[in-house]
Image 1: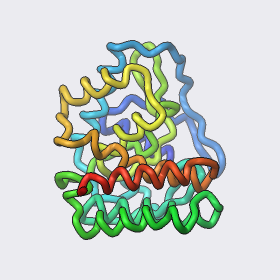
Image 2: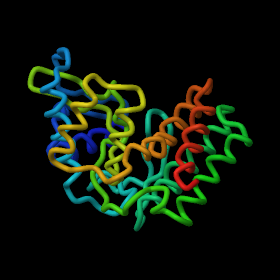
Image 3: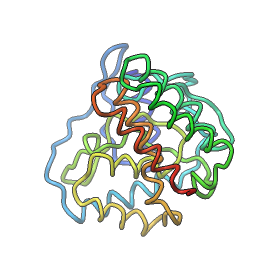
Length: 243
């Protein structure tokens, strides 16, 4: 886990993200450069959005691929193991490497019922049978943080620094959806800065729920509680696009 996180930070940094320097890592420990945190500002948020967009414009290997040079076949989001893969399309990666494994883990832990899984399975089927209707226009793979909730964005005097990535060749909208899941200061400014560099595809806001199904399943697998129901609602909302 430490090796993959270090490699993810290096990859994102090479793609233009601000990340703390990796001081050292071993089997159980990752030591990073200290980040002096300050309050977020509108200007810093806009600059962060523009920087994230530049990261997402960089080329990446096929969908589901790990950080370059690692050769990893599996990784983690939080403490949940997830596979890497090489897929021609994002829906294939999302279904095979993210939704189905996370749903299975959530069922095994009791965080998702079989009845709730019906909604997840239905979403998976639609993503594979009619991907553009559910997932929007096809997009090339991009380097993404992969776990970009607000706690992994550290505001420092020089701007936002990213930590704790689950970096993967993925869909840029995933990072934006994660920022919306638990909120972020000046999120509207982040989006404005992002779109000043890389305009988002039409309908991206309607697809936020689609990209949030996976992190909600991760929470259902790890923490239980209401997250299974939340993942089901997000899956239902994602499929409601076609009705």
